Image 1: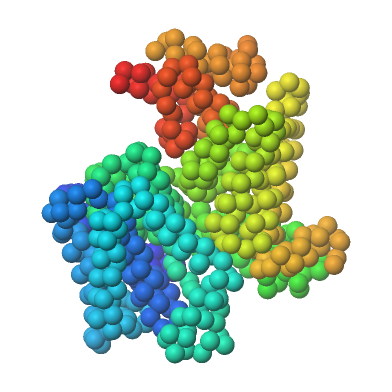
Image 2: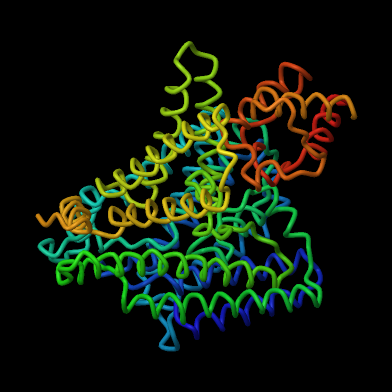
Length: 465
Length: 82
């Protein structure tokens, strides 16, 4: 995202915040969020995908809403305005194909009849699900569908096949097929927000859903690109809040902090940071470490900078999004690090993977160490694979899972063998160890292949391969 | 409310932290300070369910729902009244 785009988003957020009637504010918010989603989606080499990806995401949201209703006739009566707004927004953007003014999408949209046909298909699928399947079965079907889409787009080997298929039906050259053809903006966040809604509906933690709330939650423009993943009930409450003067001041301050972190700190560190391009041009282990540390700081300032911009923009509308970072690089152990890094994603996996799994294991006869190792490893592996289903992200997850296990066992040992002396030195040592471990782990994250990462990993210790 | 607070404080000090002499203040941060980790929270939830008969959901074991004994005791008390 460029600085100009950030300022534009801030201006739109301030405009939305001007509406003191939250109902109208939320309708305006939905229209802007959908338009911005189309605008931010980058051009793809495969024809029309920059239109189809956002359309498909919105259609999935509509499908979810229809399939989760108990009485559709009543729900349509209450939500028809929002449904109409969503459908009109999509068709208006598609209608841009016939205008020479400007395009919201990166390239010209497809034929409008195809768009209308696709939308009708989704709506009919929703109605069919509603009439044929039970509530729980519909939720299960949608959850499997979302996980399936996630796997399809996050596994490079499968994405290439999909790219070949899409190129074939578009009569484009299949020799250029690549996983990079399928850049679907924000889909990991959107799918995990949808899964959260489905899982909570299934557990009766959520009741009837309003279409306006679902669309605002899934496509809320400040958090489209890099989260955070707010929880739906808390977000719903925030939609009823209007901004006051102190929100504008705090919001703008946060946006400027984000701009400084992203465009000054992160972008400057990028000049020095380790990357797949320079990793094999640096031969000295010392300089390799410097570059790796620069990457470690860069990824933090980049990600937390975007989070600041998201939280600040939301605040301009009076909306408080949850924090995603809490000084993670100042923590003195890995457990604390994972309580302060990408907090909302870690909380998501804690709520739906770690906690239920640990509860079940606690009721078994497994030895304690196994009831700790299994959930920690599974959760961290899944967090790794959330970034992309590759061997590298698997190892990154494994690295942190094992690190957390050792940390847990050490903490447990300390309970009976407290080290009461030299707390300051312990903290310094703990900080250095944690920062070093996390930084070393980034090697798996940043290199494109397992063997590249393996090579860089050992060269950091002077063991050239 | 006081007996819930005392009970929870005793359980955390004795069973979780294994430090029976440790006193936990009502407003002392439990999760955000790192005093309790994710495994401790599960043990605490299981204990609360057995001791007070109220369910603490997996999605509630986080600092947004409670971060000190006072908030947790209030949550338990509210659910016991239902």
